[in-house]
Image 1 (tube, rainbow, N blue to C red):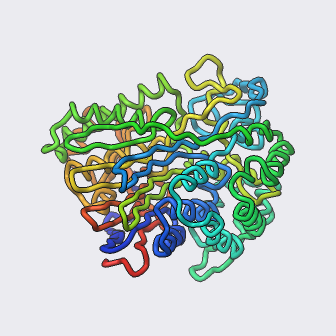
Image 2 (cartoon, rainbow, N blue to C red; image 1 turned 180 degrees about the horizontal axis):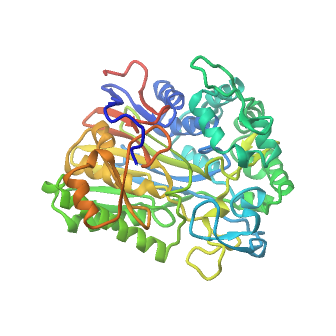
Length: 528
């Protein structure tokens, strides 16, 4: 699978270390800088998370935004305890399963194993929209642990939206990959496309400075800053969103929004070697992570973690854990479909941490824009199996099963916050990076840059091309395999972001090949 790409190119992303302040690692460097500035102003890790969440929803709108959902793990240093917060999407209580009649044409066009639905009604358009939870989750965390005023935390995102998204080569490439679907919605086409065909601004020259008009998004954030987060659930924003979704054929109601609540949950504790992880339980990848790492603990010795046989044991454990998930929880095969998720990790100067994952589900979500708010709408209904009688079958008011996997880890004198984007590729990446941090005592940079494998596809194991040789041979003797290069696009593996606290020193970085992602230290706190 290497094709025409260079065999000799070396790319590194050293991340950052802070000896007297906090660190933010995010999939967009400007969002990471936004969070670092909040930390420098005296904000808590949770304050920084609120600012980063809204900023990255502007800067990387096809991956997440206020009209999506997700989950977060938090660590509170003064209590020395983790917290888990679930703010996933759910189906409207008014949803009519009969609307999603099977097309009888085989598997769905978005490359997951459900049967295709007539007109892809569960994948694209207003009828694919689920009840959003991201803003409720942020409000819940901020209300409990935040120090800075809510409105102040939305200020940077409002500024970025007024300026408009810079359409550089990477943004142009992302938009171009979904242009056909975006053209089906007049509001999405007006925001992202030129004449329904090409990314606005194109951005193919190195010094291009074309920008999207995100003024409506800015106005919505201004309203959310002034009126507070509940406005999206019971106020003017709520009414506008419901009207827009209804006009686009969806089932979302004002009652759905008014009744939505983010949920504090008991963290799932996962012992591994001489360390432990905490993950969000229930309808996330947390239980599958616990299953996989239990398999590893029995399947190979920590001292032999680099051996070919240990890689085989990892792949086998991941496959068994995923098979159990599919049989008992339900899922969709987003390993092959474009993922629409972002993750960021934060540690502040006091050692408080946030690992937060938020998503619209597919890239560009439902490929529709709410014209009143200027925001992309999620397609959370795609998470459900349209056939009745299955573990994850579509039903009114039902919570969506997510692949998100934010974790907090503790390994002797070190603690870390970690997560990734990439659908079903998320959990294997988080598990392997966490294992590197625990078994090999690697730095966050080395753990993220280490070669990985992905066993989330049913028919093969995908391995980093750097594992050619004894490891690749051992894997190919047991599984069908595919070699893949680590490239900026498309990602054959998940896109992680992590921070670590070793004693009083904080560090953090993101996936090396993410063009926009980076670790950023609190200003005046960086040592490298």
